Length: 307
Image (cartoon, rainbow, N blue to C red; front, side, top):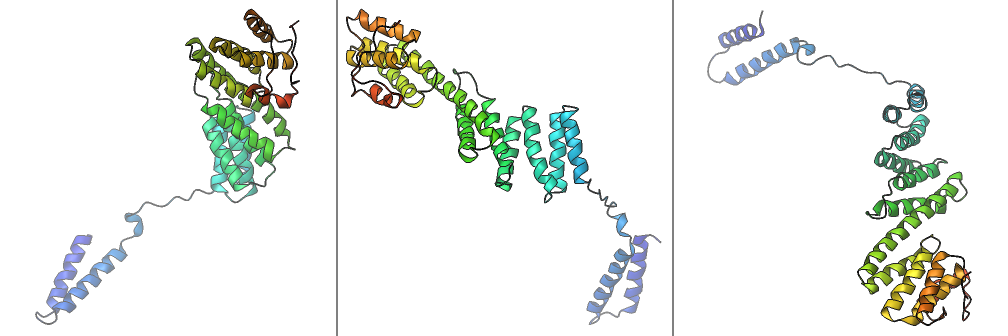
């Protein structure tokens, strides 16, 4: 019998059994009970589809599939997704820990640097004492490093790379990644110095000498170990000579000659100073001299004529 007909028949039967008046409440209660029985009698599967339970794959199976996709197929995106599946299905297992660092590595190899950084940071947060924490930190630095743009563009990624790589050297100095981090760090520092030089030359060409000097000063004081410091000293000689501040021009040329006597930039600086009827001569009170005190500049001595 259809559900609607069954309900109507029960309703009619109850109406015949119940007298009007005070018993109305009982009639309503019985009607509700009858409708409840009808609902219970209907199988649950008529309202809801059968729930399908998908069993988890073994963690080692998922992990090895990720390795196959990574090493054999070179499908880095699919490999990363497979490693992520280990973490999703078996979040508290040792396989999950291994898979998380492999996720970061797969993303790095595939050039998905932001995903790599996110996975590596998550690994360090969850497993800070793990032997692989150093590698995770290195992957963060390497991801930023590989995105460094040329010196004419914003160097935000360069600064992030330097911070991350420096953390590798500080926190994990005895690991195999520290040496590589230091090499990348020097390249990143050279990049930032190059950016400062590019901006300084721009100001110098516009004859905004004070702005140019301030930029060259950053190179001298913060990036002494980069290849740009020699040119920075020569450019300081030029700008100070242009401003008529000959004592600082002489000092810049002298510091350049003492520290980089064979540099072609020193030949240019020497010729510039000589052209003004002067000799390179260092003033020990100059900020340039103080900046180079740690690298062995001989005070009060002339560096001599370049060879």
